[in-house]
Image (cartoon, rainbow, N blue to C red; front, side, top):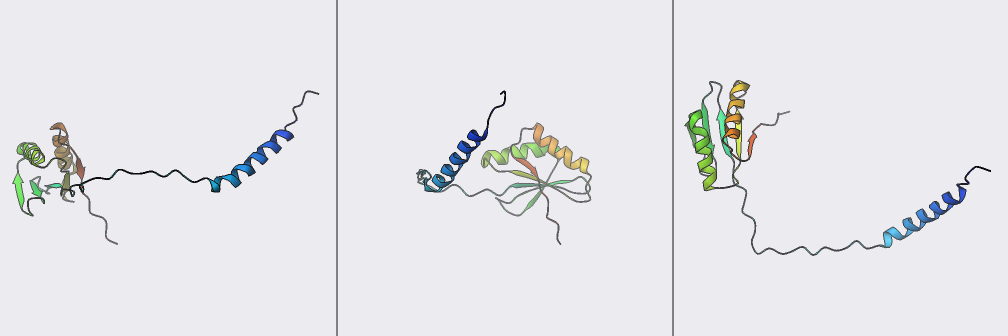
Length: 130
């Protein structure tokens, strides 16, 4: 007889399954004691907003310093952003493009910031209204 009888193996497997199903709710998960910190984390800094207008003009708004808008040239943009990030490290940069602006202009600004090794660069979008 060259066949393997698997019925005893199935019986053992089902008995083990029942044992684990009964024992699993009785096991208490381990408790983790998290360390305490003495100070709270610093609040998030408002990002620097680079606005690309339809004509290709660039404006920068640093909401951490105020709501005022400052017009900049493309050549001066990376230096201005790096200087601002030196003053407040960890501040993100978002690029807000006018919906009538050419996509190429927005990509030029994104490429300029990436080549200048500006950290934390993203795109700003407004959610659609229903």
